[in-house]
Length: 20
Image 1: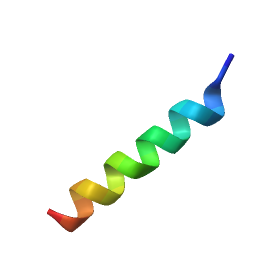
Image 2 (image 1 turned 90 degrees about the vertical axis):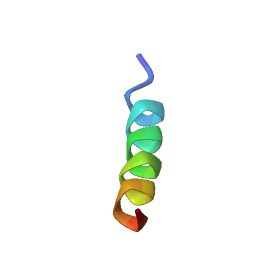
Image 3 (image 1 turned 180 degrees about the horizontal axis):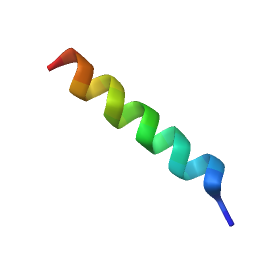
């Protein structure tokens, strides 16, 4: 399982969405 990887990707996505 690579939950950490998924969380990292999610964090980046959230940041991008926040910027928009």
